[in-house]
Length: 329
Ligand code: SF4
Image (cartoon, rainbow, N blue to C red; front, side, top):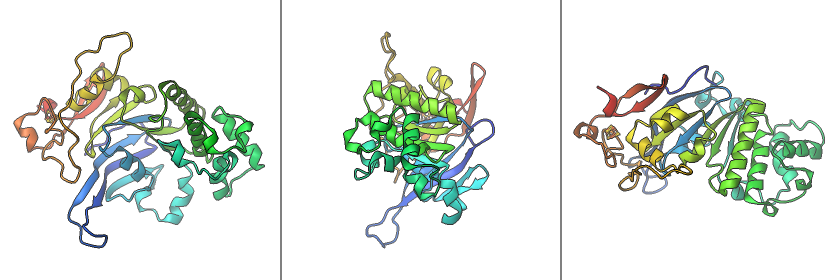
């Protein structure tokens, strides 16, 4: 599968696969595989945010975790700043880990409830032997970066609101001066007004420190506020990638069209909403041909047997890429 990206890559992903063996018992032979990520390729430029969208169960989180070596890849390549991440041993990977961070959906469970905030946000620095100054001074500076103040230092996670906890998670993630952060449904658990504040904070930090994000969400209306490009994922594969405006103004893949039709537009009656039939099929037994054919309102006979090729399209002079037989003539 060809790459989907632009410019000099900070992260280059090629044909990435993460398959989980299906076993009846722990040590019994594999009876097949759950193909959570199955041949994904894209590039991410320095300072860029790529939104990754799709229904739950389509492999987004597994993809993010595989990039950071939190899941074992079954095949493919992930090159970060010239380092082939999947082939590095743990010792060689360790100095790179500080550059690659993750922010999780649920700040309630991702923060250690027994640690005070000053210990949470400086934990990585202490582990890497990089605490430069007094613990309180460093923690205060980090809290200030995310809009909190020193009054939080000696308090515990349960004393904060969801939005404040996500700010603490972000302070922890930026403490080691990362270059690349996977934000996994990082605002999905928050109220809409708080979502906007956290997105604004992430955008500020991107500008301040030149961060790159893979911003994972099931909600395109959130992704469009933060991402320069969008990648749409369905059942382990990318189906459309392009600049955010091009994908949202002129979605080409029938799956993307359904996702876009669900975005509310303030002050406007919603144009025809495309409601997809059924659920996402099991990644242990994906449909043949185009994986979307069982739900696609425009499916043709050969969609059931032939995998769709990559097609490069232009919208207002901007390229975007789609994997669909509708455009392959
Ligand atoms: Fe629909 Fe066929 Fe395109 Fe798949 S390849 S999205 S089934 S039209």
